[in-house]
Image 1 (cartoon, helix red, strand yellow):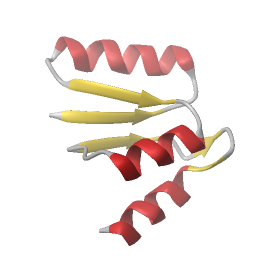
Image 2 (cartoon, one colour):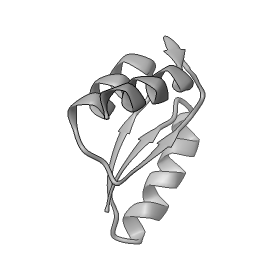
Image 3 (cartoon, helix red, strand yellow):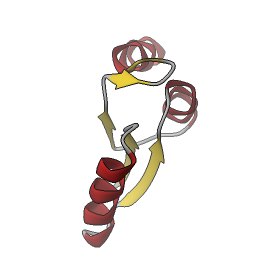
Image 4 (cartoon, one colour):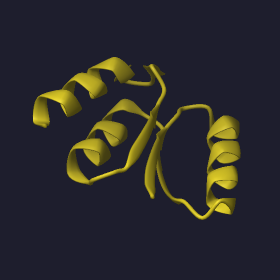
Length: 70
């Protein structure tokens, strides 16, 4: 399963990544709005863990863009 983690707090992101990798998930991450939007719109993921408050924008706007594109 390929998971995109969108989280700007580095320590929390690392903790989530480490746990999911230990469970054999394929993990990608983004720490700001622009990087997250680019990855979410370019690649296919089975799951996206999405933070709402991000540097440069709002996670809900990313969700709206994903919804419009499907």
